[in-house]
Length: 187
Image (cartoon, rainbow, N blue to C red; front, top):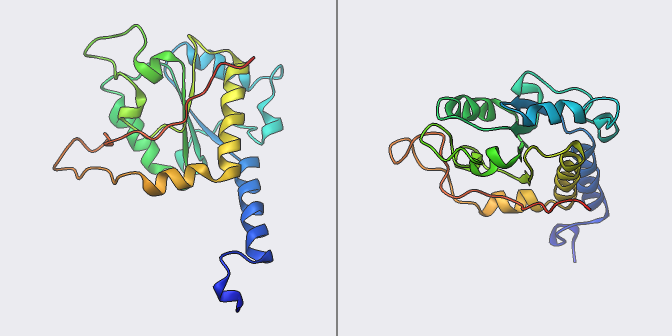
């Protein structure tokens, strides 16, 4: 049996683990704070909670320098195309964390002006529940995302996800089916 017949040999298997570790240890978030959840997101970056221990020292203001978008707060219909444009400008691999009940489901704003879930605009990887979620909940969601990056489950799900619709079929920022991982409340 030749080495070409093996799916993974000792070198490539370990190299994949190193790449996953590097991705997990250097997730740089792009802050997309839209409402009261943004205050809790800023508190999670402060000294009491210190996201720097997860390799997330600075919230990036440029989407080209970040690979995690934290959508914190309600998304209006006017903000949805801007959100999608920022997501499209991010480099691959990229992840989305929906923070709070307003970003995840529209919250108590059940009207025409608010998007009823950010997963209608971008594919969401992790949901952080709460109104607003505490910094501990955000850190739990980040650790859940780190575990998904480490195991490679996110890349497998995105590989089987349907292709986004063409601009002629639907609006350009709305995917067909959201890809998501549910998050339980930390204990």
